[in-house]
Image (cartoon, rainbow, N blue to C red; front, side, top):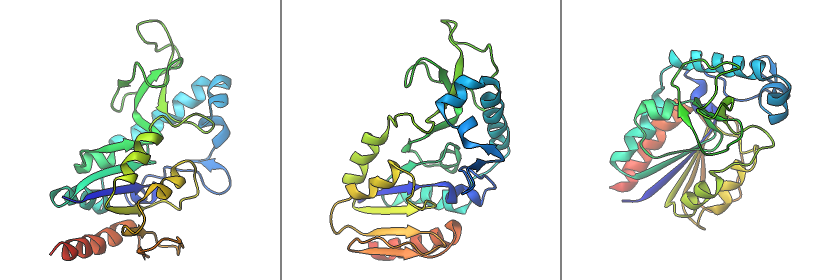
Amino acid sequence: MKRLVVLSGAGVSAESGIQTFRDSDGLWENHNVQDVATIDGWWRNRKLVLDFYNERRAILEHTSPNKAHKIIAELEAYFDVTVVTQNIDNLHEQAGSTKIIHLHGEATKVRPEDQQDKGVIDIGYKPIHVGDCDCRGVQLRPHIVWFGEAVPMIEKAAMEVSKADILLIIGTSLNVYPAAGLVNYAQYGIPIYLIDPKPITLNYKNFVQIQEKATTGMELLKEQLLSDQL
């Protein structure tokens, strides 16, 4: 079974109604990114940051995966699929994907503010507040990789990309590093597909762009991939 690695970004979840990344004006859901998505913002105003992610969680509770998420999950019947996502939502999980690497963390999880990858707690869609602590009395924070923080899962993601027989890039403009650099780990000559409504040029052999939104693009790509299997 061929290995298919999917690099997914905000464009996959946009059709589910989730805006998961900042606009060009530096705002994220009308908040300054420096206030809600940096470690400095956390130390300045924990309450603001917690309230922001509580709201993201509340929205996510009532959000469903779209056709793009579902087709990616369906491809597990034909390929060994690993999803490497920049998104903090759980829509890939809801759709049925079973191997997912969250580069930027997960909105439905929290951890102690003094630890990066230990003490992680799955809280689902519940809110957390200032004063909510772990068993040691340490304040809980969102399990999110903020700007300026290390990306613990980047090496694992790079390893998966290096073993891919097929690489799919969907819903990301490849402008945010280090995630954008993952494509450079792909083996020379493997098929690389990119689904995005805006034209994007990659200087790779066997690169094909499907210039459509995520749902339409995944329908077309699934048809292509399955016909190549015959």
